[in-house]
Length: 367
Ligand SMILES: Nc1nc2c(ncn2[C@@H]2O[C@H](COP(=O)(O)OP(=O)(O)O)[C@@H](O)[C@H]2O)c(=O)[nH]1
Ligand SMILES: [Mg+2]
Image (cartoon, rainbow, N blue to C red; front, side, top):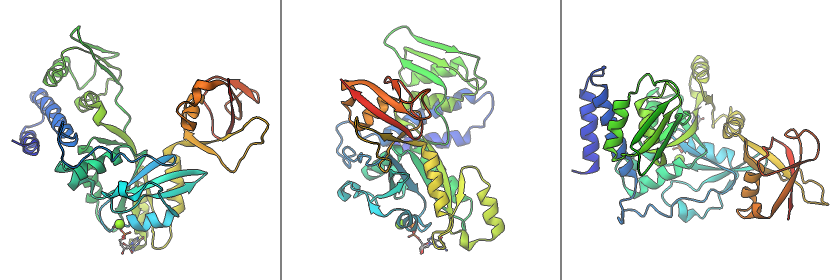
């Protein structure tokens, strides 16, 4: 039996099983098995040659990557051409699996790569190379923009969410607060800060046994974790937690009341590419969701160039700033001089652990 058939079989069994206290354990085990199969589907078979999944992982040019996901004809291409001026420098052959060459959105001095992903679903769910590649690109995005058609029903969103869920993408959800480490000896040690309400020790050990994990430390730090959360943590390398912004296009074609209703939903923004409405808001929201900040670098004896900021993730340390300049940069590091809202006096002498703020000026002093 192929993986797809096995998946179907388990899904069928799950749908036939009534959800109650008595079946909880059985259903939990099935969920664990299902997660394992879905993972196998997306992992290139060892030594296999189907599709050459390797080598696709497109280098992230620029400061962040945003993936557009949506059904055909919702306006993805229109949106891409409105907000990007340049094509991504990534050679287009790297994107032969995509419908278009990625564009670059320039905003606040940052270069944000925008990738239009073709039907993530259909490709991925049959486990073919192409689908896997598209999924790999989606998983390394810093933000997903789900583009929806305001004139179509609610269904489109639910279908796409389900499909992303299936390939291991968790939208707008923090990573479950569970520490998990596989060991070589010592058996399974389960600890929790307060007992989880929906997950018991018996189920945890049964799932681990099913994954052939016999020695591990498990520390559950949140009483609300579910069996799904726990399974995600076991399959950690396969799961990505990504923020998603829901963008409804074509609001020119629906009533004001409808626009108002949609716009009130969480993580949602409305626009019309055709009428040029709301596009600036979408770009601003992308920037906000990416949670990036700007720094200005200063070299000794040279004044700061405020027109050429450097962009890093919010919460970055001086060490991460060094890493984003060059991977070996920190080896020559002596100290940093920092001016701005992250310091008590200006300039302040800082070490690698110092956390920078937006608009700080940073000067790295080498040995
Ligand atoms: N009414 C309306 N039509 C739009 C809007 N944006 C795009 N379209 C139309 O929708 C169709 C599909 O657009 P396209 O960008 O190719 O969609 P894609 O398949 O998602 O890339 C085209 O005929 C566009 O002219 C919009 O804001 N309002
Ligand atoms: Mg298109």
